[in-house]
Length: 289
Ligand SMILES: Nc1ncnc2c1ncn2[C@@H]1O[C@H](COP(=O)(O)OP(=O)(O)OP(=O)(O)O)[C@@H](O)[C@H]1O
Ligand SMILES: [Mg+2]
Image 1 (cartoon, rainbow, N blue to C red):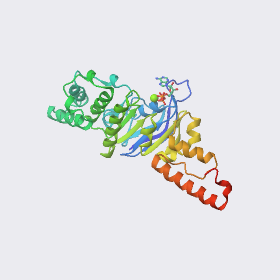
Image 2 (image 1 turned 45 degrees about the vertical axis):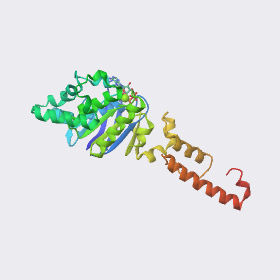
Image 3 (image 1 turned 180 degrees about the vertical axis):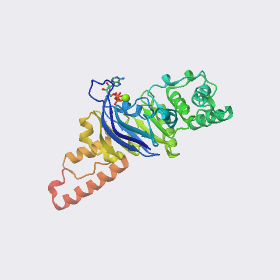
Image 4 (image 1 turned 120 degrees about the vertical axis):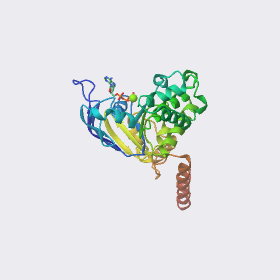
């Protein structure tokens, strides 16, 4: 479990804090989308999860290990893998295979185990056939999958990803999303910073940050039903959620915790039935139906 207690963080001691007493628990195996406007502190928060940053005040615990404890740093970095936006900056090997073996190669493991970890990691992301290739010949999506394989070879329990698909084309985005979902099904905790509405909708839980604090935290349908608050932050909501919200603004009694076209169709069909029924009693309403 990842536990954040009263976390305050300042890049500069004289500045106002970038994180303002954040409290948060992420349970093992959760798929969390972390969203919020530019500069609200998302990256700063997840950098605390693998000791890239250390709290100015408060604590971050990874599976009971305190990130401020110097003797726990190695263990924590192994438990929490980090993936960043630009896959090119994460490539360290001359070949795909060498790249993935870099992390486990630093763990003093027997060569046979390193070999096995590399093979399994490449298999998990679907890059088995690319082992001997130069990473620079891969597509953006494949490079990001390679970066994920490098993390998997460390056998982490949790992976935090900072906008991993923002530089990818739709095909690359889909392949990364599919791998993340598969890893999550196998029990890995995923913390995924993204601005992509489709990726957010698929999470178990959505955490919305604003100005260094957590503003909303809940299931995607709960969070997205707060259309006005999200719009005020300049954030998008799924088109169908927005449609239901506009109907509600027009005075119709519809749910706004709707994320899929199918659910929206059901809700609109029910609305039309109600309108027709009302029209049959009072013909004045027929025009709107
Ligand atoms: N290395 C740094 N030194 C000083 N200030 C920083 C540094 N990194 C980030 N900040 C500031 O901290 C605040 C939070 O930044 P952070 O990168 O965590 O936001 P974010 O939510 O990840 O934004 P984005 O969506 O743009 O990636 C911003 O005001 C930013 O300017
Ligand atoms: Mg960021």
